[in-house]
Structure formats: C-alpha cells, structure tokens
Image (cartoon, rainbow, N blue to C red; front, side):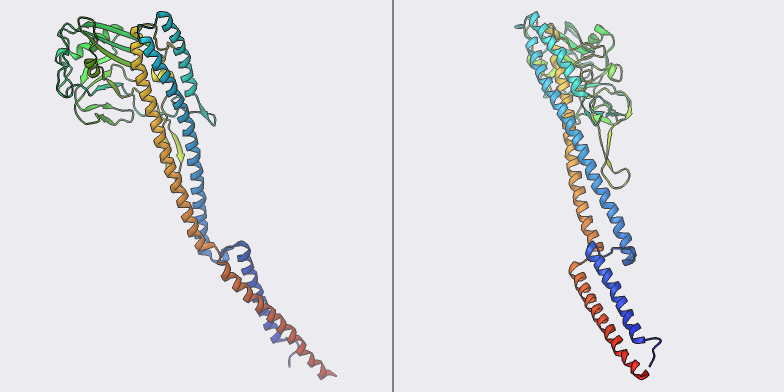
Length: 434
C-alpha cells in the first residue's frame, strides 16, 4: 500500500487530461468548421489549403477586375453609340445640303449644326472612367507609323494603274462604258477642307485620276497604285490582304501618319450632257479605307489583370474617336464644309468613313465585353471548383466531429467519476492508523 504516490489516481488523471485535450480539439473543429484548425492538426494539409486559399482569393480579385473593366468598356460603348447617333444626323443633313433644293442660306444653317455636332463628338470622346479619358486616343496602340490605304474591290482583277478610264470594267468583267467625252471628277477632304477637280476622261488612266487630285493641293496620294492582293501593313506591322485574297486596286496617301490622311474620297463620272452615271460611280467610287493612318506612339492599351499569375490579363484598345480622328474637323479647327453642293456631296463620303470607324470601334468594344463575360464565367467557375477542392482538405465533417466530441465527453466524465471513486476508496488506508 503506497500513500506518497497513488498510481491509480495518477493514471486516471492522465486519462482525464488526454480526454480533455481531445475534447478541446474537437470543440475547436466544431466551432471553426475546419478539420485543420491549426498547423499542428495537419502541417502538409495546412500548407496545401493555404496555397489554395490564396489562389481562390486571387481568382476572386481577377473576377472583380474583369467586372470593373467591363464597366469601363460599357461606358466607352455608350459614348461611341452617342457619336453614331450624331453621325446619323450629320449624314441626313449632308444629304439635304447636297441637294439643290437647299438654298445657300439653308446650307449655312446646316453648317452651324455641323459646327455644334463636331463639338458634341469631341465631348463624347472625352468621356472618363475613374478620371481616365477613354476615347481621346490615349488608350490606343500603334507600334508603327502607317499610311492610309484606300482599296477598291469592285473593279476587275486585271485593273492596273495604267488602265485607261475608258477600259475600266467591273469585277464581273462587264465594261463600265466610260466614254472619252465623259467628265471625271475627283474630290477629297483633308483637314476639314474639300478639294476637287474635273477633267475630260479622254485617254487618261487610273493613275492620272490621282495625279489630277494631287494637282489641287500638293501631293496627297501616291500615284503608284497597288495592284495585288497585298494592301499594306497595319500599325502592328502585320501585312493586310484583301478579304477574298484576290487582286484589287489600292491607293496610298503620300505621307504616313494621320497628318497625311484624307477624310473621304469621292469619284464621279458625268456624260457630255451633264448626267451622272450612277452605275459607273457605284464601281469606280468604291474606294474604302482598308488601312487606317496611324502615328507611332507605342502601347497605350488598357490592361486588365484577369489571371492569378503575372501576365495573365486582357488588353483592350480604344481608338481615337474625336472629330479630328473621324475627319469631321481638321487639325486646324475647320469643320467639314457643307456650304456648297459640291462640298456637301464630298462630306457624305467623309461621314460614311466616320460611321465605318465608329462601327468598327463599337463592335471591337462589344467583342471585348463578350470576352470579359466569358472570362468572368470561367473565373467564377474555377473559384467555385477550387473552393470545393479546398473544402475536402480543410473543412470538418461535423457529424464525425460531433460523434468524436460526444465520445470524448462521456469518457472524460467517466474518468472523473472513477477518479472520485478511487480517492474515496483510498480512504480506508486511514483505518490502519487508528
């Protein structure tokens, strides 16, 4: 019989301490909902779970970035839409001014509207998001300076710069029936001013047409016309080809960059009686912008981080949508002139080109928004799956933990009861001393 050390009591006390520790651990798991509530529970599982948690939080931030970028593009898209509305009105007024039913006084009134609407286009382009201007060209990118190229895909594939006007034919091979006595008129708009010249078709070639245009206001066009399916190089340095990869006639501006570009080009053929040959003009006057004039200014695109790692993002380019970039206003401040029938007719081509640019920008923004929608869906789905995977590692099985907690609680109470019973049983040692 030992009094100094009661081995039975010590053993029961150790069991109580063990159950108390286990009970505390299960209570921690139940209260936190985690199977690994501390590093000591499972060091490797803890490290894996923390890495996954960091990845999930990064994905959630990427989702917010994509949503914010989409909001920015929505603001820009609305501004471009407003500019399109303005251009629609401008075209209606230009067509009105191009008709001789409008008097000079009417055209001067229309010109006042042009002046005001040009300012409205600039206001639209200066729309901001979080203090950042969106459509002033600052978010555009241009690695190389490019010359403007206008391409005509309606003329015969055999057409060259040396082809006489009288020999021109449609894409189908049908002759345009331009007579030597017909009058050819070529007009272009540059820096808000309209330049025009007329001459007898005679034996003039297609190159002569642009040489005549150059005689009005200096060398504007490169008279060495392009005659292949290769149109030129864009601002990224990539070669641009015709849509169907067939030969087409292209004319390039003499000077590269926006300073050398023209806002619109119009070609018209009239017979000796002054009647406009509309069927001829539909093919000859089909020069449309295939390469836009750009100034080299590096990468100014908007970058949105949409991936958990470095360089996993989306670049969004927004073109310059100011009135000068659209050709409605020149760099000298002159607004497109519609005070005469001839200038108003030329203005129609300018506005068509501006509408084409605005539509191109709007569809580009729309495509970027669709891309962001897909990105948001993918990030959300990935975050959800990663959370589910992390849950299998870190989260506690509540039913299992509750069973274990109940077990430890009952065993601890039983051990405490046994400790009390053991202490009571050792009381009979005192009877030996009496």
